[in-house]
Image 1 (cartoon, rainbow, N blue to C red):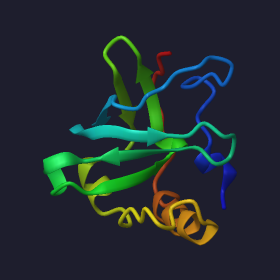
Image 2 (image 1 turned 120 degrees about the vertical axis):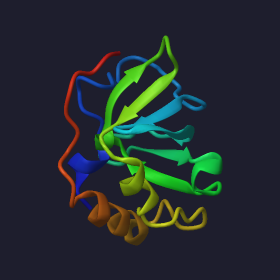
Image 3 (image 1 turned 45 degrees about the horizontal axis):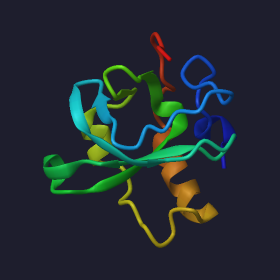
Length: 123
């Protein structure tokens, strides 16, 4: 597993501040993709689970923390460095095994093919 893929950028999330992003809207690079169902903040193992709602027929996806480029608490939005299509094509979220190393490796392999996030961060 690639720990840097599963770690928030330091300019995006400060582990010394407490912030619950569940319920925040998620903005892909080309528009809103859904909302945060849950999020974790463990160094090297962080991710957000995004409920895409009706956009992809209610699919849930797991996004590694490194895809998050900005968190806006005032607007209750998270911005990710992925397009809607990249998120749609991601491995299906598996509620029964998403915490297992083999599942996380498969998801990491998919997202690891793309450049890491960039751009300004706000928190």
